[in-house]
Length: 179
Image 1: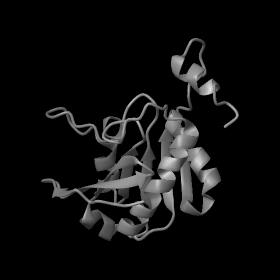
Image 2: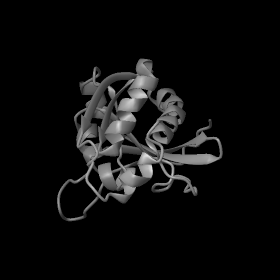
Image 3: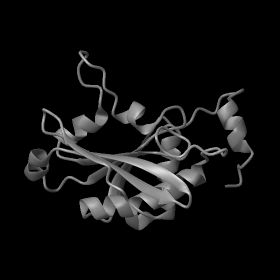
Image 4: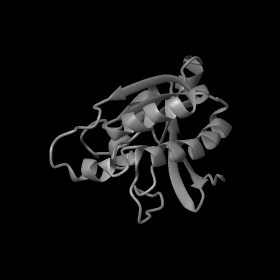
């Protein structure tokens, strides 16, 4: 595992955005962190919040969407303004993380989270975190909570995966149902 902090910018609203990289073997995993120093100071008890994306969209598209001229769409910005230290990552095969010939299974997502946690711990000073997962991200977050309960102090899950007939994503996942 390694980390390379690529970017730190402060937006006009004072939110600090940092990009980090973690390694999972040969796979590079892209992480983004957002926090508002003044809000963190006002709410020192707020946990580090890690947002886990599902299988349809990457992390930034899911949790840090920017639509100029149309108000706030970034969940990360909203929670940063509430005093949270907010993180998310692109799982293997998504966004800016390495795209391999494989498929991002739930167990692979757990491995991604395992690789990312030392980077989050080093940057934030916390050793356990609050997790929110949506869609298959809920499954990844839940499986991670089972695999590393010492790293999870809160867990929220929403919109668990649709199990409908004819879903190509779910058909592919059933090939590894024993996981």
